[in-house]
Length: 599
Image (cartoon, rainbow, N blue to C red):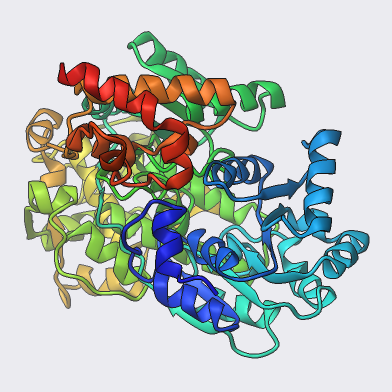
């Protein structure tokens, strides 16, 4: 068996393991079954790739999407590792190459979809081919409690048995206690060795803003990320296309991606995003799981994600290389209402709907959090941490006040109108707006009519969001979005409890903008001339070879290159991510660019 540390340096070009990797790798090398929960960007793939190279045998990797298989196979082959995949996009020549390599034992890692492995003939052939390790990526898809449950993943326990009960490693970034238990039950006969290496992504800067003007807020955010690649998530296909057009008009290289586009257009846009720098992908959640691009510098949400797990996974697509990255999530009451309707209208069981409501409630609470966002987020996953200093609430500060009186005004308005009305009617009542609806129901005669004239409508909407996040009120979606009081809301209304609310979210938009400063600092500025020249060379190689840009070198490698400015082959070999295969293949071309800029 070859020393793992030597493989790490010689093949992958890394000097040290990331936190948690080495103990998982050694457990796999010891022959143990493993369930590993690691944050996105922690290097889960290395936990099965490196053990494969340290011993004999074939590793079968279950991967959810063809695009992901294609990119990972390209990356491995650029490291000088024999890899292939079984998928419908292969041509005959590739299928022959894979079959021959499996037959003669040179194939080290073989990727396949769960659908392909449901075919008994395929698994019988693989069982005869000496599969020594089964690696299941995105393992939360196995569980009915996971936020991305896929029925074909649930069959992988049977696949494992058909392969002879082969040693298995299951990996995921998002699995709570219930999901982990379900994964273990479905995949393993005995309890696997479980590693939980935390959910924190300290390099991600977290920020959330109540919607004021979505287009302007996004442009303000993107203006800090010129020349960088990122993703903007939208809630609908229509919003995706409109926003991509708006960003293009504003001078960004913005592309749309959603399930309603033809496969050819989606593939073309995806390849552009992977191969070129400075591309903004405006997409629905159809884009993401299959994208293993480590140098995404930002992720923005133009609307509220569907759950706290979805939020965590989607922002996790930024900064996988460990370098600083920014996130921004915009949210409003309409988003909350839409997400709740989607849950209620789904075909899920009552138990599943209950869980989805809890997940959405946790996300809403995060939006209106009165303390460090990272503390609130990690608390959901059962972790504690000190204030992070890398979220909008830590950076800009949180201003709070005793909001008991404001909460009581809102709660009283809800009660006095019979718990039958929605947001805008209640706010009109508080500010004393005599609408037709107000007069028709006689609500202009109520004691609460006009008691909130000291605040604007926008302020009252924010206060309503906050008491909703605090659990004082509930939203009855099936009855036109009417508000009702919870037990805690009744206690606050009666003066039995008080409540602290945030005042900073009540500021006027201009005041809030002055408090924002969300630029991720890197070792080399994004507009550094040498860095831009290195990226241009990387793009040229990526297009010539038909692979994603990060397969040539990640952003982290190029930033390290621009900072160290190596002038010899030996110095180039010390750059992050430069193993022997890449040193032989690319050193001369990239050294020429460094020397030109030195001159």
